[in-house]
Length: 420
Image (cartoon, rainbow, N blue to C red):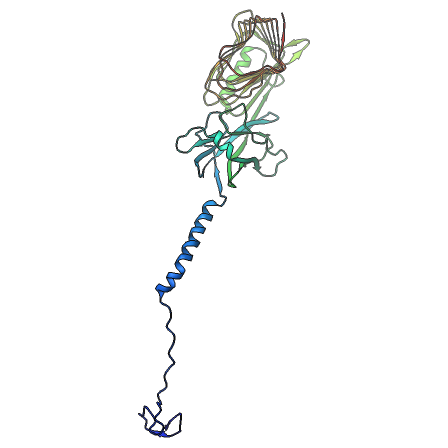
């Protein structure tokens, strides 16, 4: 193939580097390119922008509102420190997170328990409720639960006198028909924009219910009643409901409950009511001491000595009458006793509290009438710093109405004190 000069067309030898005719170079060269900046120069320009962007990103991640979530407990941290938040239904259980709670539903129309929010300093364990509440913008509680004809309900969270050691409390109401499991969730919105969601899972177990009445059970005397109680203590679970409708007879021998809760309901026939003249002794069983025995519509008639009900396990008396005992109701050991709409007349002591180290069942002692007692109410020791509500009670003709030796908080704003 011939090689020609690209400028004058002269034939050229194959190895020629320039044209002998026009003396121009015939080798084609790429045009010189401008040198690219080195990596060091690029880094010099980019690095300040990269560092500035990283600082802004760290600041944004640190300062933007955060969301904290947990079941039972959660650790919350702000610029002033770290806090342990936890839930529990017991008073003064501020160091025991409760992520899951199983309770039971028997024959009561409605059940209620409190769910407390405790706040502790993470490093020292000290109560940090006051400091935390100053940072709180708003609080709410909602329940995530299955569809139910009787849904679980709750009150708005707020500080409660019932438990001054808790930052907030809400009251949870449920029914035998309530479906579970359900999640009870506190949502706390902080003033700095942070959000805390703290929950507890609630499971409701429907207990077995045993009902006995004179139509199907021998309840004619103390021996027969004691035999039924002994059977229930041996053959039923502590959480089962055992309900006994008593005939309008008089039980003349002591009855013993050995820790298992029994509900006794009296009846009336031809002007005669179910009556106990030798009292009931309630012993303690740690495995069953959560459950309450309810005594309703029963007369307890003494001879001036002895104790009508000696209670070492939980008790609630309703619409009962206590007459002529050295002590009508004695709560001792580790126990909580409530009495509502009852009559205490001509006793040495009507209601005597000498108990400690247990959570309260309820704060109401309402609707009672105390007449002609040496001491209507004697409070040696009460196990919780809860305000005992004596609203609607009447004190008349007692030598001492309330002997509050332990300085228990009382609400007597709606109590009637009649002069002798």
